[in-house]
Length: 64
Image (cartoon, rainbow, N blue to C red; front, side, top):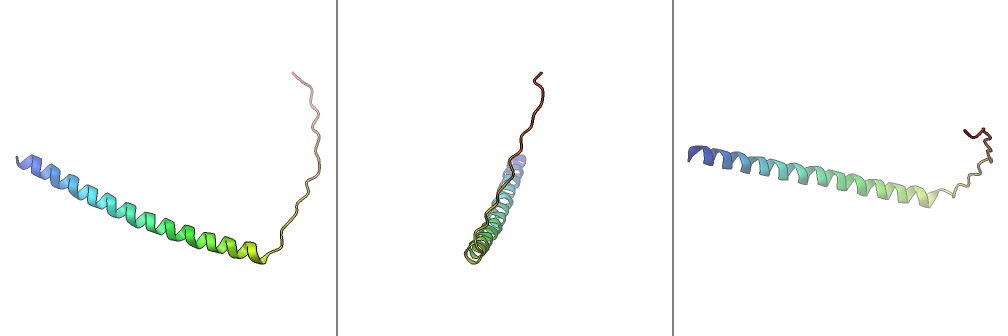
């Protein structure tokens, strides 16, 4: 009976620690994403669109 209680307590402690970790890390990632999205929107609104033209490249090689 003692071993069952000890295992249940350990499992409960692990689950609490896991839940706290997920909430904390998820909150940090959510905040980081929010800041990045706002920064990207600000950068898009103040800069002119960029047009890039690439030169055409032809590669000739014998078929094997």
